[in-house]
Each structure stands twice: as structure tokens, then as C-alpha cells.
Image (cartoon, rainbow, N blue to C red; front, top):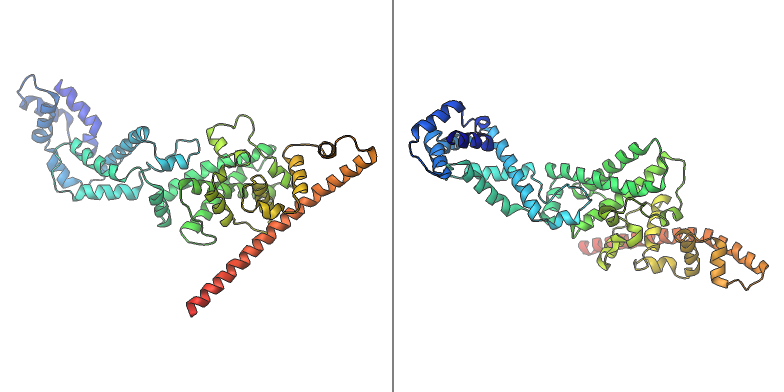
Length: 409
């Protein structure tokens, strides 16, 4: 029985691997031969084993700051502890960033955080008589740091923590695949699918680093993990559309953007969460709508981005820019929606508007006019959005000049 105790302890705490035990058989013989008490419990025997047979506390005191095998073993121990903790205590950050995969950021053990934990362990003067005391100490310190909050995660990214950027890279790749699958639901199979996928997630990663680390471009402000997820998804979507335009001769029109919806089989929890054009998860409340409008970062020279932005606004009547785009042309916008979103023909639209009582000639004229209105309204909406963005940019420049003048004064 005592032999089994020792073997289990060796396997559990990697005593041979870390160097605590050099010769297992010698240690077993010494423990059994020196411990003459009978009918004692496991705890009493293990105390004797660690203190009298292998002098565990002496070994740890002299080796913990220089033995890389001890460090590696304890890293895996903390990692396992976080995995078990995560099962019983889901983190708000992971719920906000959910993609449907099992990737965690809130319970991710980065090199920097573990190094901090291990430094505390090395600096601790109290003797650690058993491996259980070491793990109790480390788990207690780990519990103080986890789960990671969104604020701390964002701070780590802004400080260019390499471990969390590596983890974020995996997250961006997973999220981009969801976005890509939604967009490609409308695309035929092609030879450049893999190229688009690689370009999207790598470029999204670089853009986010530019914004958060190098502070370049239009710097976003995030309040929650969901804000960050939506921002990344928006970049992925625009890049996906742009890459398809680059590698395909097929032009994507505004109506294609308006008619997007997930295909059957993709309506699981994760993809429903990304179904922007159905429930508009991007804009769950007014604050998020204002955030998106404020941070609308598109290239007005890129017709793809402009068409995408227009479609976002048209499909959410609560969007702050909606009345500015549609004022005075509501009837024409209605035709666009009926035609693109609801799939109605020009004849059906006219029948709903005028009924079937008008004569054939008038009906035909109405159909022709409806078709022309449909073609014209896309250009009108696009031009209005471009003007809105230009005016906003002018205001920003004026505000900047005004602020600069006040500073000079």
C-alpha cells in the first residue's frame, strides 16, 4: 500500500522529472523500511515521506529559482486549475467574446501572468513541505487574478503583451471564419477562398494592433467585450467583401448586401449572434448605435465599403443616420427594400401601391417609373452618405483647429 502511495505521488507531482527523486526504488525502500507504524492514514505516511525521506522543503528552497522543470510543471498545474475553475465559473469576458468555440481569454494563462505568480512563489520565505502546499499558495494567488476583466485584457493589449496578442490572434481567426462563412453563403465555391480567409484574419489582426498598440488611425473606444467583438467583426466583414471584389470579377451590389441572411445549417447560437442583417446584434441599444456611428471608419472612395455602410443603416430604422439618408425619398427607399429584401417584382410593388384598378397603360408607366426610382435611389443613398461623412470630417477638422487655437491662447 505504501509503495502505491509513493508511486501515485511521483506521477501526480512529477517528482522524478523535477529532480526531487533520483532513484524511485531506493526511495520506496527507504520509506517502507524507516516507517514502522502500522494502521496509519495516508496523510501521516505522506508527511513522513516528504519531510523525512526526500526532504522536499530543502529541495524546493534551493531549486525553485533555477529549476526550469519545476517551473514548467507548476505552469501546467495552474493551467489545469484555471480549466476546472472555468467550468464552474463562466466569465463575462468570454460570454461577450463568444464565437461558439471553446477558446477562452478570461482564463488564459499568459507567460507574463504566470511569471508574476512564479516570482511570488520564489520570493516566498515560508517553507513548502509538500507539493500540496505549493499548489495551495499558487492557486490562492491565481484566484486573485482570474477571471480576467475586459478592462485588464484591453490594458494588456494596449501594452503590447505578446502572450495576449497571440491569444487574440487565434480569437480573430475564429471570428473571421464565422464572418467569412456568412458572406460566402452568397458566393459560389471558388479557387481563392483560402486566400481570402488568410488575408482577412491577418489584416484584421494588423489593423487592431495599429489601433490599440501604435495608436494609428481612428482609435476606437470600447466599453465592453461585446464592443470589441463587434468592431472586429465589422473589420472582418469589410475586408471579406473587399477581398472578394479583388479576387473575383463578380460585382457585389448594394441589394446583395441588403438581402444577406445566414443559410440553413448556420443558425446555431454563434452564427445567430453574428446575424447582423436580421436582428441587428450590432445595435442592441442606443449606446452601441452611437458608438458605431461615431466610429464609422470607411473609405468613401471604396464603393464596397459605402454600399455596406448604407445597407447597415437602411436595415435599422433606429440608426442615427437613417433619417438623414432617407429624408424626402422615403417612397424610393421603400421600393429598394421591397425589391431587395422582400424579393418583390416591380409589378407586385405597383399593384400594392395602386391596386389593379388602373388601366394597362398607366400600370406599365408606373412599373417603368418604379424601376427607374429603384436604380436612382441607390446612387442617391450612396451620395448622401458620402456627403455626411465629408461634413463630419470637416466638423472634426474645425473642432481640431478650434481646440488648437484655444491651446495657443
